[in-house]
Length: 157
Image 1 (cartoon, rainbow, N blue to C red):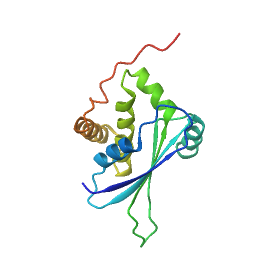
Image 2: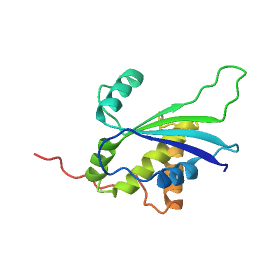
Image 3: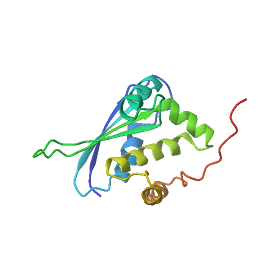
Image 4: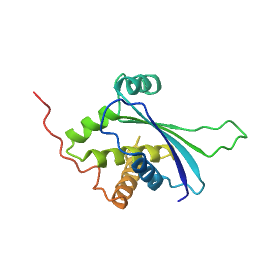
């Protein structure tokens, strides 16, 4: 594990966003690379998340975390992992819905996004199992419970 620089951009105007120190801790724990690197974590509201999710994934709704791995032009080596865009209102809603502490869910979103930046994915079952097991291990190392053991609450009627 090597040093990771975290550039935090909080453009969300609401409450409940964790401290920069927590983002640095979570991202650093999930950086499995051998070389120093840098990641930008941008905290946004629903509109920016929905716009990016629609533009890059074709889904016209806000989402919890988007990962944008850095792709250097040929012959250029820059120590950038990429960007994470995390939607604060979605994270808050999911934490409540899944009966998780907000801090644990924020930590999971950072860990999940950081693994995507490093090439992990959950498109097929085998890849999903590898990624989820790694997420569970990293979350336990950070002192949080298994993020996939949740109790969904009934939707409001």
